[in-house]
Image (tube, rainbow, N blue to C red; front, top):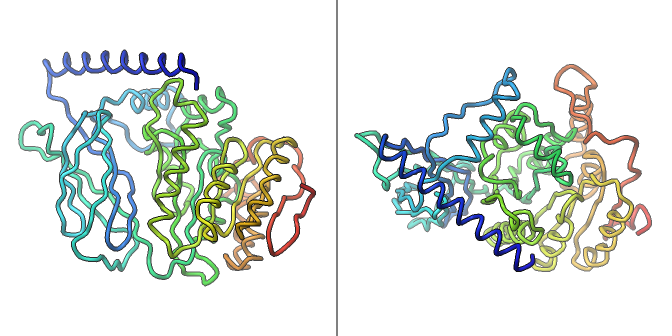
Length: 408
């Protein structure tokens, strides 16, 4: 990014901060500000856990309904974006018998590693924790707190799945700014559409070849934390495997749109996860619209022999982009990994069956859900595959076990 854009972005942030601080001071004269603690799903192992969330003024946003109007969705989007944080809030975190003090940043976000005094041996994957607001002190005697969860993979896990969200799980069309903005601003968790068959495929990866491996699933995205509740609710509605959502602070500005910030955020998040679970192999899932192939290739280089496969959904339908992804093949093969570029979920699933990562009979359930998502029966709202027309052709498979299925 050029120097002038960085300067303009900095000035814009300063002006917004001054306006917000002034407005908060004026409101404080007339009323006590009711805050709420938002907890995001964390993750950890048997000796440490990462807890994260945010402290903001109460927004008054409930779960979405089928009857929500476009205006209701727009107002809720405004409440999410305009939510005023509690800068430098102090919290008390109770996790696994240990109480820790945590301080939020100037945007109200908190994120901290909790070191457990005694190794945790989880019987369940999700371990609860409590986050209580200490500063600013809540008005009256009311205690402002929330319960969060930390994912600790069980010993049965053999693989770890890390997936992008936009245009990988959810049809977002992030390559078209206006279409993506309209989707986010005017829709809700019930109007967002999945790619056909994606839920059944991820559930098959979670179950693994043994059928009960409970492989952990992480979702890493450059979407803003402001819409965490929308994405989380979407995942529940679509019955996606439960997993941590690792989003980012996306303060509107020039730098937030830069590809370097996208690359840095996802790369760091993935590296943190892989370092925490050195005993696991990884499957990385993304799409061709942004930099997922390049980010995942860098991950393969940084963690040799750790990435079992890279699955890339082809949403561009662009020969030049497909060719550039195909050129990554030599480096993928050299790192003993595999790359599959495909348009449909079922193609990735077939490769996973061939490599022994999911059960063969899972293909039937994935195909059945794909037909339901496409409107083949009345069990689900139709979610056509990204609004594409025609067939993008056979998948590109680059794997040590088999030669490429189409020319590079």
